[in-house]
Length: 361
Image (tube, rainbow, N blue to C red; front, top):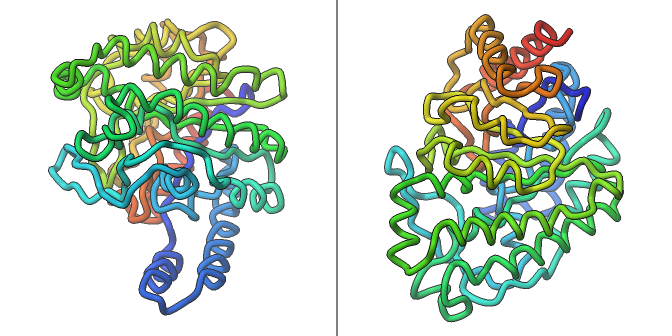
């Protein structure tokens, strides 16, 4: 990662052919084998797009997933097919998520097919992404559904961490050398609405955050010694151009950025919602900070001079040679993706690369 100044978070817009294949499979018009062929074809195409843009490490665009968390919920006992109620910025709430309704146990691998295909077809180093504990603590526990197995949302932390560590260990055995953990819900702990929810349930938000941080530290423990690069991504939610959380990093930076031993942090910084760059001073030396300056929520292209200026501002808090640049989040954290075009996406990937070249050479 230290030599990769231009990167992206992971998910990419699905091509129309893949979306049609998924619809046909859901309607029973094509079988699973035909869907897999469509996925394979689309992934090889998006690998070529990444190669041509010069961005890395490679991902499969998360093309085999309904959303960035869906493979885990398929491979883990304890989820029920009931959607939670989430308060998105524009009021829309049809995200594809499942609630926790029983004890969580790792049942099946949920990234094996992704890792195997990337190992065979990626033109260079690749990464596999997995979700983070806090996502499920915030979004997938609901009274009346989950409390039979877990009386409070805090009680799911240890079992979730065990599920994720099982998958991480399997990825390492697969030979995967770059794992990214996606954590859009850390910012729930600076979101006044959600802090009020936790307190109304009788929970101490700071203690709940501490438990999640300690769980993440267990998940990544020892991976560096096994030759694995680990990144963690923090945003405020990413769903068809909307967001879920409000609040700057200031209230969580010291605990989160200083408490989980990863090689690099990918931090959303595309709008004023993120606040200043000052919190990155809490990132330990020897870690890279990837500045998510290019938005994936709209197709409007950022001004390159503005991006360079913002990187310069960040370098007042963290060394320039330990910074990098990326989009603020994925382009399609769920299957339909954000409201921008395929060409918009490519222009933004190219902009990330050209900006990195301009700043770091």
